[in-house]
Image 1 (cartoon, rainbow, N blue to C red):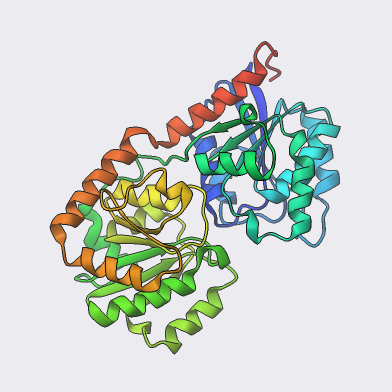
Image 2 (tube, one colour):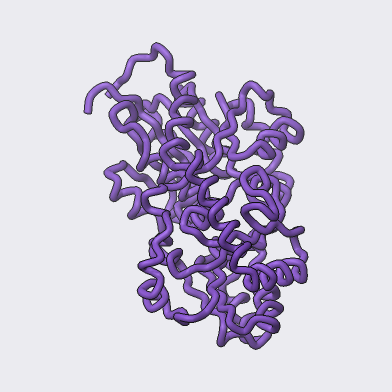
Length: 377
């Protein structure tokens, strides 16, 4: 195609994560008649590498391992060789390293996509480095109003440099499909007659899957028809597997590891349980809403912007295992209330949380800065 702007998305890695899912959707639903997209991962390839390549997009790994930071010279070569109109960074590593390189190489539109208020767990020197590079961002995209407030209050970013764009999902791919329920349960080895409660995401500190297992044990003590399934990979995989055995719930918990196509799993799921310590706006919550699964989540800022406790979901004080368990059991025993929550959540996600709307809003930010610039390819 002729007459397109060149956009390079740079992300820490293409391993499992919500930011990676957002990135894939920005490309899949982007206007490829106006934009030529490329993707660079700071290190390695990761589980999303093949999905991005399947979209016909140039993909680059800037270093084969995070311990060997070849990404600085390779990023510089890439910017000089490809002459990108926009460099769009995702996650802290890309913000700290890619923005300065892009600026030095003459890319004057640098978009910083902030995917959550997760920074309290980062080392102080990482946070300091990111704050030092914030002035190099032409504009910030925040996934929630709370993320925008964080940027303004904690990082001193001017409000007119931030646009809030809620995450979105592919509503054609994620939709209620009750006719696939039996087949999905057979595919993943889940009991046909169980009430299946899923945990989805990276097996890491912020997701708090250790609490998820504590809640599972408490629920199973009261409702033995419950069955728990975790889809995800991460550094805590071994520790979590050991805990499942040690607390004696291995007969009713299944650790699936990485699931390449979550749309195949959701028809088997009755409820999503999110026990995270902090989040931005989790893609998994939107997927659950769109597929008709109940949502029980930590009461987090970004989640509260989308869902209302007692109307379309259950929102619980983070780290309150007993409150999680009690609310889950109550919802399992009240099918009328569960039906109402599912219906309200489905209406909400369909009303404005699509991947297409997300991509269109992001490209409107691009257009604000491109204006009269000629397209180069």
